[in-house]
Amino acid sequence: MIDSPSRGDEALALLRELIRSACVNDGTYASGQEIRNTDVLMRFFEGVDVAPVVVESAPGRATLVVRIPGTDPLAPSLALVGHIDVVPVMHGGWSHDPFAADIVGDELYGRGTLDMLYLTAAYAVATRAVASEGRALRGDLVFVAVADEEGGSRLGIEWLMQHHPELIDADYVLTESGGVPVGGSAGGPHSVTVTVGEKGLARRRLLIRGIPGHGSAPWGSSNAGVIAAEAVTRLTRFAPRAVIGDYWPRYVDALDLEPDVARRLTSVAEILGALPALGELAGYAHATTHTTISPNVIRAGDAINVIPGEASIDLDIRQLPGVSPEAVDAYVMSALGDLMQHIEIVDVVGASFSPANVSPMDTPLFEVLAEVIDEAYPGAVPLPIIAAGGSDARFYRAKGRRAYGFSVLSRRWDYGRFRHLIHGNDEHIDLESVTLTARAVDSVVRRFLG
Image (cartoon, rainbow, N blue to C red):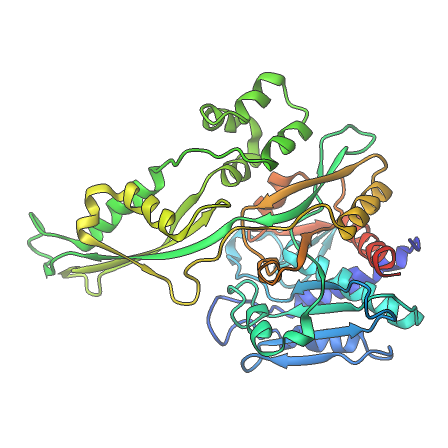
């Protein structure tokens, strides 16, 4: 790898511009306006011998693609896929302007710093470096700065795979959700997370039927809002059986815990009682060992003096590998019990079911990732994990491509803190992590395609 502090400087400068574009995606058709960030990237690639392509799936919903052809048509290709939209903010919860990209000490604050603009910036820097040096790579390098990941990808990768698959296709893919150091001592971690797969997504809507009536006489009524409240309570309390699987025990081993705590965390019968020992990591530990149901959008009533006859609850369900659509519905019905007489389960249009997906680890790219991790933290090895959330990797895996979530963060991070700040208040990243990741991505590209 070229030891290039300038890689980190370039990535930091670009990252701040991407944050300031404020491409906030609230899930509506016209939000995001990622064209602001594709404009930033077009300027970034000016003067370099590449031909960026910008396509819009809807007005302003822009994706930029740069492809640098390789010299060997039989060599594997690599796509660096980074989204350029960000989620909304709760302004009162921030101590710094979420779109000013302020640097405070050695930390950069802003919406999207961790999810995932620091990586998108690193991808752009590595791509421009290859192009500006005129370096001949064996396989194609593809940089994809994509829209709408935060909205479910319908106007992003999913749309591109339907309408312009030739632009974004590659044999191997790097994207978000890796890079957290785990275990070890002050001398360095002994593991760094690499996301090899993710849980599935099943979005369901519960339609609840009551009987409308006058709000002045609620006794004995069949209030759909009250039924909905009880349904939310039951869903929240529902506890499907833990599934330990292959990946969580590796994570527990890497944490260097007391033997009894480690044993309990890998026991189907005892894991729930042991979770508090993990602090901020407990949420991920639960998610990676359980199919989860989160009732996130609740609607009932139109007028204050009318007992609602209808209500709805939108469920965000994340299922483990091997869980079918039928099993998802069975979980919901089991949780609701006798309330099902008032409830109909329907799919949420456009996102009814996406299965869990995993990429193998016995690949040339995974070997390169191991080399680069050892380069950043001597002696450290990849720690494969399954992400609780979804990413654009699932669309590539569905096409048979190998996709990994990879970066290299500094020692100050643990996975609990990392997940807590993503989509949270005061999202930020330290400058060392920006540099480490920029160098690591550059090294992966040169080792794998060089």
